[in-house]
Image (cartoon, rainbow, N blue to C red; front, side, top):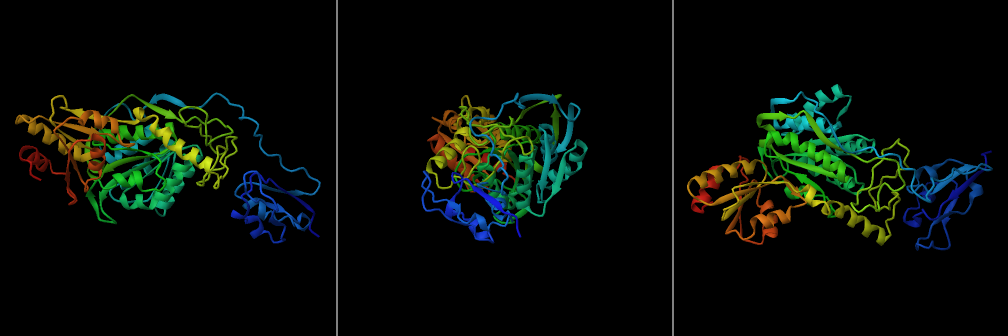
Length: 474
């Protein structure tokens, strides 16, 4: 005969018939809905026939809310973790730190993709999961060679879905983690990127953009993923995206991407393009690297904080915290609250506010010849290199033009664009897409914007930009 068991069900955690996994999986028919709702208005399940329990543990193992405990009759149930107050708070591990660079300081000659990989390692990345895809594959190859030397872990995954899932898992295991891909791979990653946003998982996603849609031109440059990075995943909360224009910035902005990811507990995009990824230039490696290490003490509320910056500390699995990590609406402890309007509202607003509230820390740009410019070019990535050449040539011919180069794209630097572009005669946006950046500039600047687009899979032609500046033709 099976030994008698006790079935303990915490009704305050149960989602009731909206879940009912316990009733669906119990072979002995122990569970049925209760005859009254909880104060939250949910009719919970109840162990209506506990004497029929055979101790198979299907219910307590499958309950997504950990609301059920099955113990032998006469035994005391496992006490729940204390919830009266936060867990003891040891000295925080983390914050801003400075450490020696991994490479000896000096000047190196490398490609943008290699510089990106070295920047990731210098920032403390010790886990990479990815799938080879042109034009980002050199990042994966370099990480596969270097990570074992540093005690890190490299995994080639079967596809991009597995890649971003493994990165998220590694981040919750306590590691700084990244992946690299291109447009088609980003399309596959978007659902789990949304999961990373909802679970506040810091990670870096490098997108070496190429011509699309679909597989497009695998080895040709484009800048068509600007809007995909911001709006590809549903929900509409903020994230961060940076746009390097040189091999040096592939190194520096990769480090910055990790710092921002760890600082704000958010996935960060590095929106490079094929030209910058495959370009070879000199890179100066400094003697030391400044990095942000996540605050990670075990605590009672890993998904909420009373602190005004809105960023809770992030413990890792195995460090003593009671962690529930779900992509569904959840409270500060991680418990699902999918029917609670107040919890959903607070969560959504905090996820965006923790980014927007610190936009002055995130915004990054560079100015060229703006003091007397009547017409201003706004550009990013490799297109900004072409724009700068055109501006220099036009100024030699007496034209008062300048360049505002955006190094951060999301959250969009509205105030920077408005203050630098307001009152100008014309704003010109050259880009390798059909006007994605121009639309944001037009919205922020409030002045006429001319969109100079190029989508032929070739580098942005600086001569065409110059011709427009001199003659107004495009």
